[in-house]
Image 1 (spheres, rainbow, N blue to C red):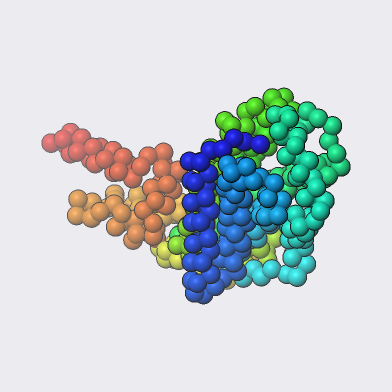
Image 2 (tube, rainbow, N blue to C red):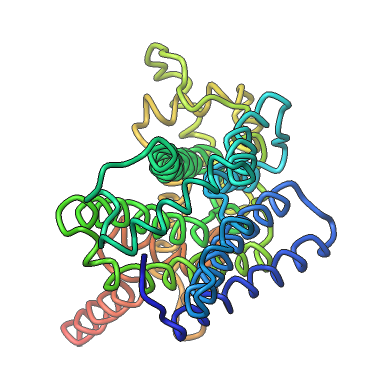
Amino acid sequence: MTSINSIASTIIMIFGLQAIVLIVLLLRKRPVTQSRIFLALLLFFFALMTINIAIVNILNAINKISLFKYIQLELLFGIGPSLYLFTKSITDPDYRISRKEYIHFIPVIIEFIYFRTNIYRIGIERRIVLYQKYSSIYQSTLDAYTIIYLILQWIAIISILVYIFLSIRILFRYNQWIKTRYSNLKNKSLGWLQIPIFFYSGFYFIWTILRTLDTFAFQNTLMEVYFFPSNIGLSIITCWIGFKGYVQSQTEAKGFLSIPMKTDNIKSNPEKAEIILSVMKNQKPYLNPELDLTKLSEYANMNPKLVSQIINNDLKTNFYEFVNKYRVEEFKNHIHRKNCDKFSLLGIAFECGFNSKSTFNHIFKKFTGQTPKEYYNQLKNKSERKHSDDC
């Protein structure tokens, strides 16, 4: 059991209360979407955990730790499913949880019931005695009550890690999917969610390693070093997800979860590929910032699935890069023709179909190895040298 740290406990409690405020804001915001409901659930289970830590420290400080067996709040089995179903909901506005998916919350119901039983209460009384005698309860012979508790705790941590992995896999697949259907990713990319989920993954992975090493190799002597700092870090990350989830809108890309990622194996179709290339060259649909797979398919008079397969299999790229490469070439042609001193580079980029400065800069450097400004300055210097030589 960790020693009392009033400052750290206060910080963690503040974040727990902040999570409750965010829950209220999420549920009051209209319309109440499924993604916000699952985000509110994630914040709820997090808040229970932080308040639980604070209560332990308060009771420990006033020598009333024995009362804790009646007010255990932590429900670790709820964190993973809430994060996973939130990720599914935020990546596809059309997704609706099915009845069978509620099975994900059965373990948290069992956990809640367990904390209300005498099995738990008898076990915690024995663990308190063990903690008073040993730095780690693993140093003594464990009774059945303690073994049940420890097994549930370790399964809960493993459960969180599994659900985090599933959430990361969904985000990875989603990022691949939107690049097969859209040429501009504004209001579709979920980069704001990826970072905190990766932090979540790192936190629980490192926590599991440290906890295992500390328990079995150092008899809990390292717990003071990592317990409060790591929980403060987790508090910051969770509130970050809650705040961003409140202010960020849901993706505009629909149908992700209903469409399999793998395309059917088809033979090469060079004739159809030539039609698509001809459309891009002659009709220049890429000048439309909202060009997507469906619109290009209408230009080429083909099925969207076939167009996607041809771009991936015959042209060896994805839709996002395929279209934006044409935009980069159009931009290069523009600055060769125009006097760019009278036009901003970003303004020309928008004329060529880009609708985001960050996307333009990223794509341009990907295909040319230079930033737009570097490319323009190089072009300008060549023109000035040529003019000087001609004179």
